[in-house]
Image (cartoon, rainbow, N blue to C red; front, side, top):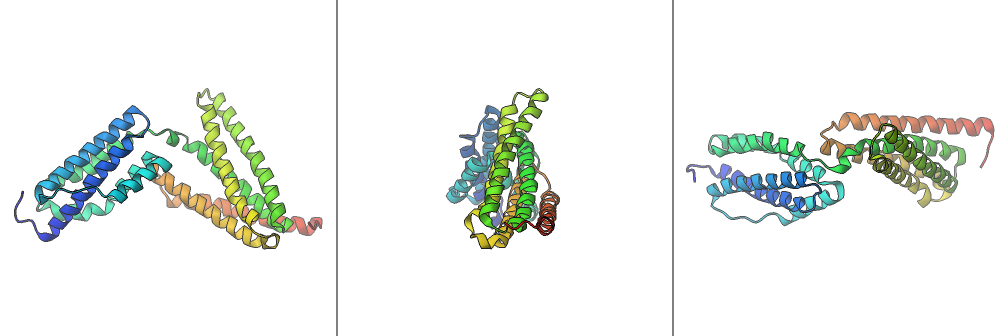
Length: 293
């Protein structure tokens, strides 16, 4: 073990040793249920590299450690629910703050330079090799999500003032939403078939599911609140729109290395603008047509 290592640096080494072991176990555990031989091999390779880093740090500390069980459980669950690509990239993104710690160690621990280079370059290259099926259909999910958000947000906002009754608004929203789900899914199927793709059914399924889940989420406030609370339901619906956009944008920004802020503002701006315009249309329609439901 190298001598003359400061207490501060030794504490950093211990923390890194713990992280490397934990992440090694996470990669190994995820590889057990990840689909695709190439994905499994890549995840195991990442696990082995993290374990090798752990052994280097252990040569300095002389301490045998155990992985953090809670962190392992957390990322295993994320991998099962949101996909292994999202989970491992989220885990690696969490290491960005380690830059200063590696810089501090460089003068005392020669191996830290090599480990940092491998973390930044080699592991990043390996992560790009991951090929997860659900990410191949993000475009289909975005299509269903965007269309449902824009169309249904506008429809519900317009219905809110025109009908002023949550039950009627919910009924109308469900009829329009479910009909539009089948329409959007079938359009995606036909478009994929016309392009000669063999995954037309999967593509339209992802589009339809994204659309339908969005419909259910946006209509829910109108189903739960009393008829006289239609404005409260509208506010809740708009809040759900923002949450859906934020959640999905965050997912794609991590899993596909896309910018978060610009995409979030674009999607949120379009959906809210359509809602406002549709609400105005509802006001004008009720005023000039003289319809009182």
